[in-house]
Image 1 (tube, rainbow, N blue to C red):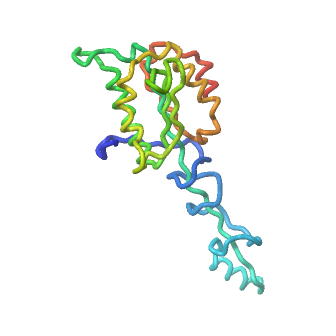
Image 2 (cartoon, rainbow, N blue to C red):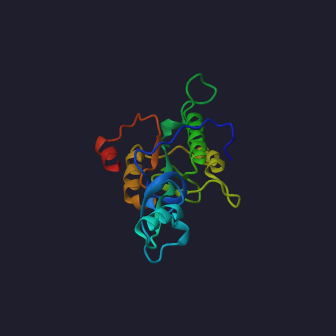
Image 3 (cartoon, rainbow, N blue to C red):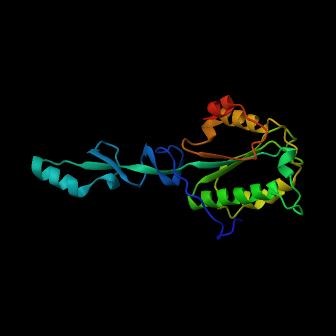
Length: 216
């Protein structure tokens, strides 16, 4: 579990969102209980709770007839946070007893901040890497955990599983980031619009610019 004292970063989507309901951000989709989007005349089938009784009374008084105004509200939605970890052999450098940056520890710390930030925003969290996961995937194959809520009393969270993942061999292929971007482009439907993709890498192995452009 991510400690409550873990630092968090703000997650500000660039546009109004479409995604999973009951989140922490305002959506372009209407039908929730968040900010008011607009008002319109009542239509058969509208729930009576959506009626703005004060506005309806004023309009009825002005027109001398029964008129009902319905308020439409924006839905509450949230993006997902996708964490992509580069697990090339070079990312296992340097041993903790040497005075240089231990990249695996840096990845672990950064991932924990991202997970805590997602929890703070009530966002879903997804994970992707191309290293070996014994009994599940071999090096070079995508290890993908789709976006899911982390506050789950019935199962472990990504924060709890992260140490196990990073204790596995760092044996992903040199082009694992390019593969990850290509993989994400094939599953766009499972990643809500406005989601954040964080790539944890030293970026020493270059990723072609067209791979980034295609992913965006």
